[in-house]
Length: 294
Image (cartoon, rainbow, N blue to C red):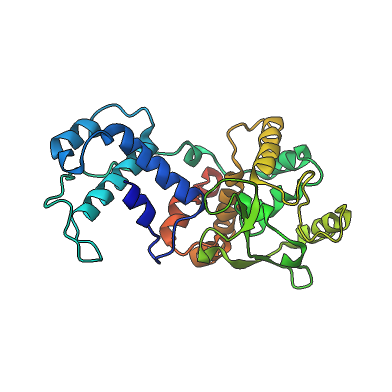
């Protein structure tokens, strides 16, 4: 398992970072608890079957990911090493299907209405409230992308916003918040700013207490507004708006859905969100709106 975690790479060969690396370690930890006392050759098809059909207190999503990891580990164990070393196993004991995706509760949450968006905006602290409108109306940004905005990212004359960085806890997803890379290469994008946002952005830029600090959102403590601070602001605002089911990610869903309903093509919506695969946009970010269907 240690070998698998250390050598695991993205399809492009780069190492996993941030939450992706953390999720990998978490997935493998579930396998350690189930099989940690066994040698590799002792993990037979019968042993795997007992675990597969047994109880899984970690939850359906974690179980599905653990199955994917287990299948991948066993496949690697049956393959010769890149250095020419022989395979660790002669036959793969994994023969079970990967469980289907559970239905996330977030898929049942509809896009945010204009009235709810206004309530969220009013309930936010003044120094971060425009984040709600930026996420819903300009690029459907992830929460880390919002926190990473700088004043130089806004071209108000040409009414475009350049999304170039994200705030995270670093490659190991530990320690203080810092400016880092975007989630994927496709996440780097330039998106239009609606006319109605231009005066609000100008006002926010003028009201920042430290004009020598290029961060668009200036933290009360520290140099960088961390995701947890903005997320806590959203949690309080959603309660005040009477919508405890909302997540900051729902604003990104709202952006994608409204673009499609208002006539954007799928390619335009993918570009706005920074997606390179149609399935990601269709499966995770677009919602059916009954009023529009009717």
